[in-house]
Length: 629
Image 1 (cartoon, rainbow, N blue to C red):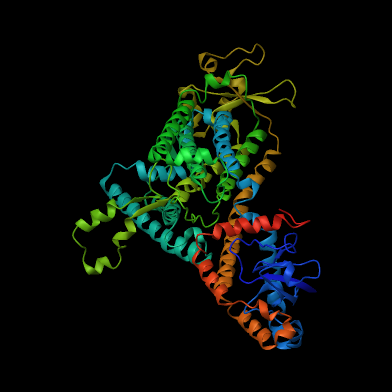
Image 2: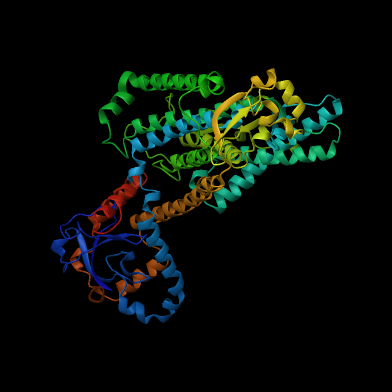
C-alpha cells in the first residue's frame, strides 16, 4: 500500500501534470488527482512537485488530500481506533463511489468523449428528423379516416376548445379552466420545480428559476386532466368527450408538425452552437467558425440560419400535408415496414431524443462557459437568451389589487418569460416525448379494426398481411360511433371485396386504399419497444448521477484552491503535527508565498476553466496504460 506519490503544489485546473516521471502514470479517486511515480521517485523526476511516501490506499486520507505540504501519517491513522470506527463504513463507501464516478463515469460529463464531437452531435440531431419522418410515412394509423377518439388528450382538447351551449355550463367551465391554470402553475413552480427538482434532487439545470415554465406546463396538463374528469362527474348532460371532432389523419398531421418543428429547432440550434464554440473544440473547423461568427458582423450566421429554417420547415410541411400519406407515398418503390420495424423505429427515436440532450458539452447543468469572444448566442439572433416582459409591464400599469388579495397573487416578476439556448434546444424534445410514447402505444396495441382498416391475408399464414384503409366517410359512420367501432363485421376484407374474384363489392370498396405497411401480428414487437422505454428512466438516472458527480468535482476543485475543511483539516493537522520525518515530505518543497499568488490566480480563473478541467481529466485518463478512455 505504500507508494511513491508525486503531487503538485496546488491542484491544476485542467488536471494535467508535467515531469518525466509522471507522464505515464496518474490516477484519480474522485476527490483529487495525484501522479504515482512507478520508479523510485526523487524531486528531480517531478519538477515543481512534492515527493512523499504516502499511504496510497488509505480510506480516510492517503493520497486523496494534500494540504500544507503534508499527508496523513499511515501509522498514526491506524493507531487511532476511534477514527477508524467512525469512518470504517462511510469512508470506504464514499471512496468506492468516488472512484467509480471519477474513472468509470467520466464519460457522463466530459466534453471530449468521441460521441460529443461536433460531427456526432449534428449527425444525431439530423437522424431524429429523418427517423421521425420515416415513421410518419410508415405508420398505418396516420392513414386512418375515422374520428380521433383519444381518452385523456381528447378530454383536455374538448375542455379548452369545445364550449357548451348553456350559460351556466360556460361559466362553470371558465371557472374550472382558470382554477386549473392557477393551481397547475403554482404546483409546477413551487412543488415540482422548487421543492422536488431544485431543492430535493439538487439538479443544476433547474437552478434558480431555470426550467420553471416547462415544469408549470407539465403540472398544468396533469391538473387539467384531473379537472376534466371532475367536470364530467359534476355535469352529467354536457360532459366532455374524448372525440376531438377531426379525423386521425388530420390529428396525425398536426402532431407530426409539432414533432418536426422541435426536431428542426434542435438541429439548427446545435449546428449554430458548435460553429460558435471556441472553448471545447476550438481546433475543429477554425476557418469556418471565423466566417460563421465574424463575417458581416455576424449577419451571415443569422441569415443562413433563417434560410435553413425556411427550407426545412417548407420541405417537411409540404411532405406532411401534400405528399405525406395516401396514394402518392403508397406508390413509392420503398417502404413496407411491419409493426416490428416500426417498433424499432420509435425506440430509436426516443433514444436519439434523449441522447441528443446528453451530447451537450455542458450536460447536465447546461451552464455555458464564458468564451473569449462572448457567450453562445441563440440561433438566428444576437442575444444569448430570449426574454419577454410584456406581461410584467402590463400588470404594472393596472391598478393594484387590495392588500388582502395581493397576498395570494404572485409578484410581477413571475410573468417574465426567459428562455435560454439550452432550454430552447432541448425543452421541446422533452415535450415531444409524449408524442413518441403515443406512437409507441400505437405500434404495440395496433388493431386494424380500431382505425377503420382491415387485412388482406396472404396465401400462407407466415406471409405478411397487407393493410387496407376505408376512406368512405358514410360507410365509416355506420360502422363507428365517435371513433369507436360498433360493427366490426363491416370492417373486414370479405365485407369489402370478393375473396374469389378479387373485385370490390360496390363503389365504396373500390375507394379503399392499399397501404405499403404490413401487419404480421408478431409478438416480438413488445420486445422491440422495451429499449426505448428503458431509455427514459435511464436518462433521468444519468442526469441525477452526472449532476452529483459534477457538483462533487466542483466542490473538490474549489477546496483545492481555497484549502481543506472538516475531517480533511483534522487529518492534515495531525499529519503536520507528526513532523516532517513521519510524513516524509521534503521541507524545501513546502509551498511558498509565490505559490499562494499563483493559487489566487487559479481561484480567479476557476469559473472560466471548469469545462477545461473536465477535458483535461479525460485526457489524463487516456494516457494511462490499460485504463479505459
